[in-house]
Length: 362
Ligand code: SF4
Image (cartoon, rainbow, N blue to C red; front, side, top):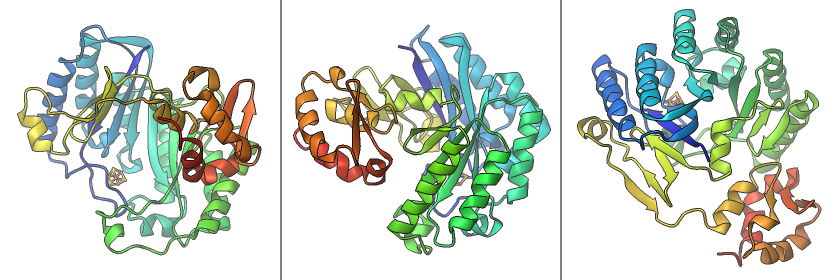
């Protein structure tokens, strides 16, 4: 199976108060040292490795000069067997999406942008500590389309107390009007080691969040998008090929401080330390799981997808899961043609459903 390559770019112009992804401030010197270190590590990938997705995540990969992105992609193409139709995604902040950068990313081979918008309400954006306005985000998406990007994803966030159904409706209408191919919808999660963790904002309660999420589902699916994963919507054929690898347990390699990987029978992580990453010939990695992809884990990941899991893929666990699923049918789970999947109601309480379903599975 083709692998995916994840490259973590650990630079942000400013830290958002809810975010605990690893990033630090950008300087020209550190960006150069970082890019050189990524290229060294790309050269250490298995020669000729078959791969069909590359994902520049962060951090804010769009802060890097486009020439650095091109340099990394060149190094990658020289080392591995990247398919001609590879999906190459770059996470982008609207404020960095200038016409010259967009053209240079296209020239380098980037085929997909994932744009962190979060909301089209300026008060919500301010409360989330975002530096761009709604209008700037719309302009950025339109510039990307004018530059020839035909595969765009946009992130929205739900759950801040000031968000209500009216604000959400406007967010969804303005999102749909932009005709992007893919939308990710995340619930605002308060991470302890962040400014929001120390001084939390007012949040929607569980019922309000559920109502917003259900409305998001009904508006986006009525517009023809498939709710193909618990947090993701796409028009047919525009699902994130890279992220599908995580849920379908395909191998992926991770490069950069804070990157994770899963291949060759183990999960690994690169320490969140840019200086150590730049100083090492080969990135330091720690094994976080020496026996990953158990039945339990694969079922948990598979049930994030609308299609669900095929009982036949779990000869040891199928009967136990089938029995545990019975009392949750049809409200939280559905069975169809040898498959088991979660309903919308199931996704809303997915942790409880999984705990019940997997209690006797190894
Ligand atoms: S949300 Fe994005 S831009 Fe904000 S700090 Fe996190 S990685 Fe950086």
